Every structure is written in C-alpha cells, then in structure tokens.
Image 1: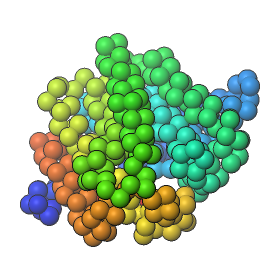
Image 2: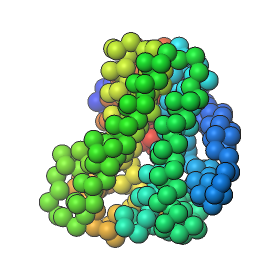
Image 3: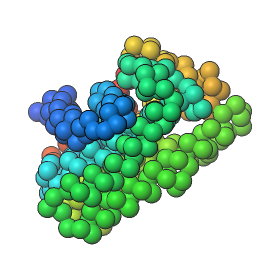
Length: 309
C-alpha cells in the first residue's frame, strides 16, 4: 500500500512488517553482544561503571540502524555487530558526560541514577573515556570478513563523528547558546546536526560501508540519516516539554530550566512536529529505489517522529 506524506512524498506501507518485533529481535541481539563485549577486569570499579551505563537499557536505535543498513546492502549481522556495539559505546559515553554537573547536570538516565550519582564524577568521566577508547579497539579487533580498507573507513568516520567536527563541536555550541534569546533556526540546526545527527548518520552509513555499498547508495543513506537525525532532535525538544519523567526515563523540562534554545521555543510545538514530519517524509523518499528490504528503515523513520520517549 502507498500513502502520501505531508509534502506528497510516497510512503510505502508494508502491513506484514512489524517494527515492534523487528526492534525487539535486534535489541536482544545487541544487548547480548554488548554484555559479552565488556567483561569485568582490573580495576573492577571502572569496568563496573562502564557496564552500568552501557547495559542500562535504552532503544539501541543506533546499533540497530547499523545492522539494518548492512543487511539492506547485502551484508550480514556478523559483519556489522562489532561496529554496532562500538556505536552504542560512543553513545553511552556521550550520555555519561552529558549528564555531568558541568554539562546538563542530570540525576537520571534511562530511568536509573546517572553514572556520576552512583560512582562519582571522577569515575564517571573516566568511564566515558574508557568506553570511547574501547569502541575503536573493538571495531579494529573484532570485525570479521570485511576488507581492511572498509574497516578503516568506519574507524575514521567514528573518529570524525565524535570529535570537534561532530559531537564535541555540537556540544560546545549548545553550551555557548544557553540563555541567548536570539539563536536562529540555522544555528540550532547546525548544533543538532553535529551533536545528535552526526552519530545517527554514522550509524546508518557505517553499516553500508561494511557491506561494501556503492557510493550512490551511501549518499542516499546519508541523506536519509541526516533527515531522521534532525527530526529526532526536534521530537526530543518537543518531548522535553510534553512528556513526563516516567515516560522519558530522565528529568523532564531540563531544556526550559537551562534556558536552552529549542525548536519549540522557535516555532512552537505544532510547527515543530510538522517540520519533523517533513524531514521524515524526505528521509523515506531517499529509500524509494529499494524494495521491501528497506522496510525497517522506513518504519524506523516513522517511529522517530511518532515516539513518546
């Protein structure tokens, strides 16, 4: 069945595909791989702190996107699983550091006390550092049946994503923008393209690179990911206002309290939702040349704009 989004973009609906089942199946695979990827070593405290946040649950959206695109491009789960784990390690590092008192100063993450509330700020910082370093080691040492140059490209993409040209740079601009009333939509878009979107884009593209995808396919998937990445952040901003602490698994209303520039503060809630839907329609449009193998990516895009947490 084909329906049309708000901008007339064709959105294919496969009623036999269950996103909930797909996400649960892949989540269990990722959870098992993460658990076995990081065992307790010496000193035990740092490994316990790393595992505490890495295994705290969550949607596991980034590793699942990596697995989905690898399979779409003809690769296997086994080829992509080490990179999928590494993406979650990097994401977890960013959450640990983001929650610190010097950053967003939050007490809860994924419904649990944040890392620094359990282990202290010093160990939390080091736990994030440990996860970041281990992510690169894990891709380099555990990836099998993938040509070395493709592994090297993934490692380079991960490095750029997490550095000053990506997550770190976006976080700096986000901190500098707090309390400023004149932040433009363009500046806000740049902040979140780096802070949130870059890792989502790398999650999607890395799976394709590992599978040996052609340049034109990688370009389409990158545009898909850029659109869902920005839509993800817009909905995050909306949920910070509209959802409860129980729904979010973290403190609600933090952006307003911190006087951060957000999409609802620029556009209002309804316009923000409409902008997010337009981005999702564009993302799904990038997948128009693929068959039902791309159904997980289409469904994930729709999930991003309709999610409640």
